[in-house]
Length: 245
Image (tube, rainbow, N blue to C red; front, side, top):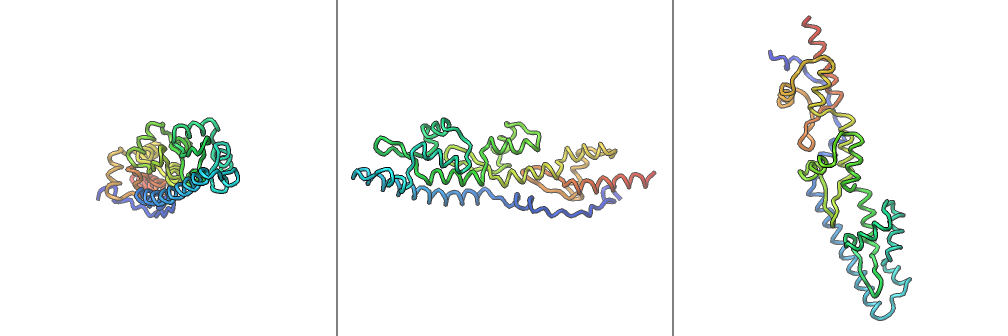
């Protein structure tokens, strides 16, 4: 009987974090965002239209402007800070000038509709920017920025382009950091077995994965093995080696 069939892994891993990560569908994220943007555009259009009508009638005083939800750059920046967005006023102003943040000039003032700011704050609670996502993941995985961006480009890490910026779901990064802490990739698994005195080549290990003799998960094109599963495999491999002596 082939050696691999002598070892049966009994450990069953039911990981809710992995389940959530695998259920994350880019199509659903896009659909949800499209619905949000439709409501956002309608809300902004109504605010700007009403404000322009009032300005034409010389009735757009400060309190009415604020009541409509139109903010000066300074007011919008303060709302962002209250919402937990860490950005300098200079950087914020630069984004407004480059039109990556929507604004409307009414009379001599450039104004930002409040829903634009509220949407940004809401996004930051569910998504990371690419740089934020990378900085979070690299705490647990040895990865450079170029490789990380490569994964995003290949859609092995889901992301959404909203306006001029790309956003990465926090749930995806939380899932990936969970994998880093609790799972081995193929190379790490083989290295751990070698370190513990078990001689096995990578291609032999991968054949066992192909035949589902070692329970594993496939995430973003990579196969990962739970540390508990590998520990059981190592213990049984060592016991089998001792029995032969």
